[in-house]
Length: 159
Image (cartoon, rainbow, N blue to C red; front, top):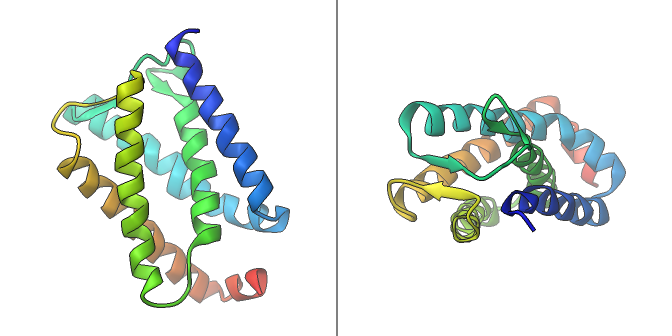
């Protein structure tokens, strides 16, 4: 099996897990945030970190790309953020611990992907990836909570 089949397999597994764990109403609600926080943000980071800075990025994506940007990771990050935002705790100290734990998980997972040959870090596998994922998860958590509070509809959805 070619290495690039890991991309659709992982994305389908993420979809199944999310579909089983998250109620449909929550998926529909969270999808709009996940597209911005997952799909668009990852696309910008792929362009910045892979194309401009050369920090690392997705490799061996075979035919699953458009203009050098693989599309399955973009979909997988969108699905990931549906699950992330659904599981995001609302009370302290968990609201602070959750993005930190998610950032560590993301570093661990990106290193697994590197060992599988579909991702590469060019400047280290711990400090820089941890900084990137910690900033990303913290910013998503902060923005989502601010937006939810402003719209005041997240309480109605999850209660």
